[in-house]
Length: 195
Image 1: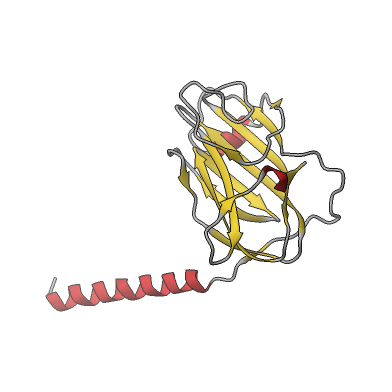
Image 2: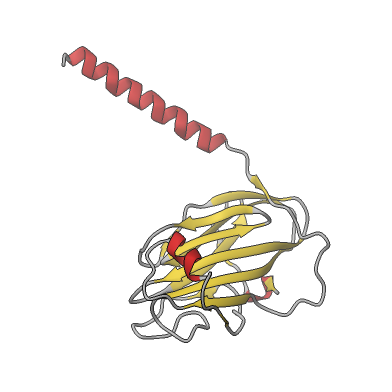
């Protein structure tokens, strides 16, 4: 291959990458849909159901585990569960490893506006708020961030939250963070969640 041909390919690749990055940078925030009607008399925290499969490595395997024996767990206080120690039970589950959690409830935004949302998770996570995917990682990892997502909150109030989470082995964590666009996201307080 000639030097000119190699140079042309490299420039075409760089142009494609620039277009792709520009499209991401210019993407409009995902518009969240508030709960309608707005719930009242919510209990604090989030509802959770657990499955305890023989093994789980992907979100697909986690979804399949929920089709079989599922147990209602004690409600989660919120979504601020720090990295566990080896052997420590995860969330409110009765096990430390090979746990699938189906988490449901609502999250409250006090003001309308554009927010950045991300999660820290160990291991897999698929999370939606207001009908939009706001956090996803399909695999196993230490307690690390998901890609940050910008969302538009059209009005203050409660937004439906659903999350599928799994922990395979060793330690586990699950945190949700949010903050106004352009500012560093902060931990969501437990008081922001209800079910």
